[in-house]
Length: 357
Image 1 (cartoon, helix red, strand yellow):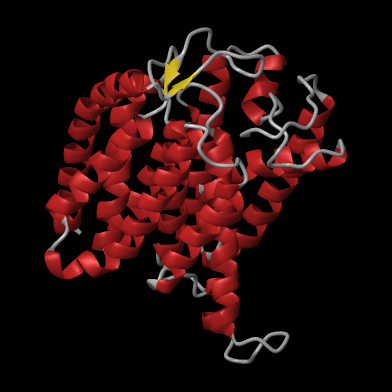
Image 2 (cartoon, rainbow, N blue to C red):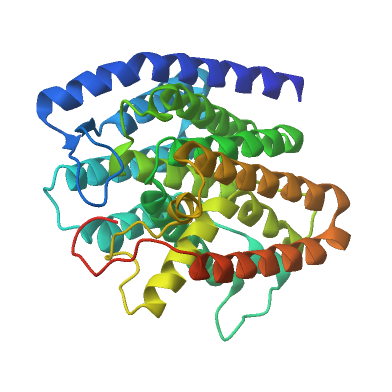
């Protein structure tokens, strides 16, 4: 474990320094090429904001991995690299207004998911639970289907989570931090290096993105963080836990984006809106602000939920099945109550609009 921790620390440090250096350069480049998010009725900023933060996070992560991953192990990183590049490029083109807003959801996210699955990034829940086909489908195929939904869902969740200064990058850093801890204990060198790299890159970028932000991730950056976070959730292995319990850990670690997307989806469907095509200030953090919190307090509260989810994941990992059902039931009931409470709280309602969420 000591060797793994040293490797993780080096990857983290390299990515942090690289992101801290590259983010100001990306900010200058965004102003030069005009890739800016202009103020508007749905915006919380009053001046044009550069949208190339995702490029700095991407380059910093790739740099750290390139330095600290052995050549023989790069084949396992290739799928992540290609899929991440697709996410960044498509998201950036979307920010530029060069693509229809549904291209990223209907084409880019599924394509990235297929790339990851084709390069052996998939769950093993059904395969490990039963060798008997379920509803006529072999366990492996059900794992492929589950992985596809997971990848697309988490990428989409991060895409719409990037709506307040420091929120998306901070949540991604929390996910990565807990992933590093699980990977280190489980002896997963490659997973730990990837998690440490994205942790360093996210924190290096967060220095410039925390309120008051000087640069935004852009949709390319948000999709990138979602893709890597989803990959970490899939690749983490918990050998001491049965598959009937181990699936809970990634869900708990990613509790914030999962909850926020669920809230927005349920709320918009109830109001007759299309969930991913009806932008508005109806996300969890927006509603917390409407309840009286400042933007900084709302983001901090979301961080707290993310940390709590990670700690509950560790509780399940340490205690095992005895904690799995109670934790899963408690989190589910708490999430349901939170959705009911936030739906009844005041928030800015919106109509459908064919623009980015």
